[in-house]
Length: 128
Image 1 (cartoon, rainbow, N blue to C red):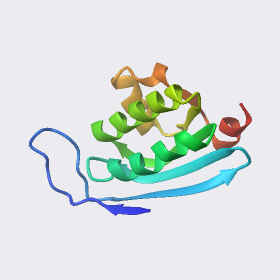
Image 2: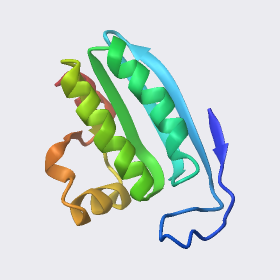
Image 3: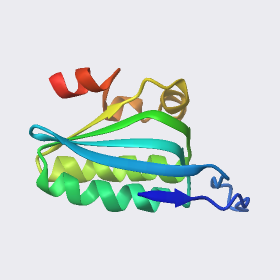
């Protein structure tokens, strides 16, 4: 899935960017793995949401690898919180791979880091 952001400033203060977003999906045994790259902003967050929520209904473990994400804005954070809540309601697990300081900083600055199951890399996320 590819989403191209438009580069327009949002007067409401949300994030839009000029870098594209890509999301790849693969199965690793009982887990579904999504690898996101680029910027998760107001234009690309719906693409992430559309992929994650159905997977969290059907797959017991969903791993979202954010290692190649260069920007995580408020729209992307909102999708992550919604996905986490969705997973918990369905008795499934959402695990994030966050080796990027950019993503960790966004989660820490908003006080959301403690809400998520976070792994340093994909093998650790699949092994826990």
